Image (cartoon, rainbow, N blue to C red):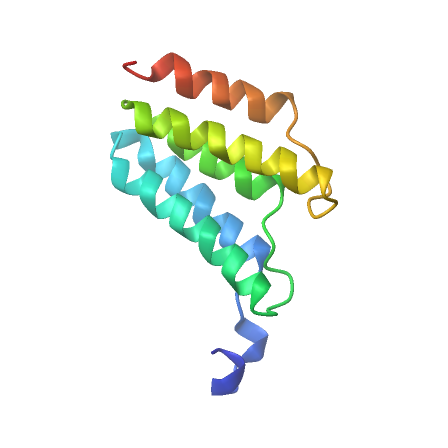
Length: 121
């Protein structure tokens, strides 16, 4: 809708969304599940924009790491740990299909381990 309003030069891209996701991760130190929900919603919005044809909005390894970090800082229920697992599996699948350049690496798996370690499960 940005281009329709004549301001296509300020259209959010993956870098813009990643800045927002990183801000959510840093702000989530209060352990509020709202940030985890919001970070997951931003990741979904990135996919939706990409599928709608908006260029440079497909999530990358940094996007997933920021969402996982938010989950780690909010990890206090089984649902957050399961959602973090799902995010990593989604990364693996996207990489295997050639949509994601970088597979999950030791950084992503370390964050995932932190999510499980901090959960009350």
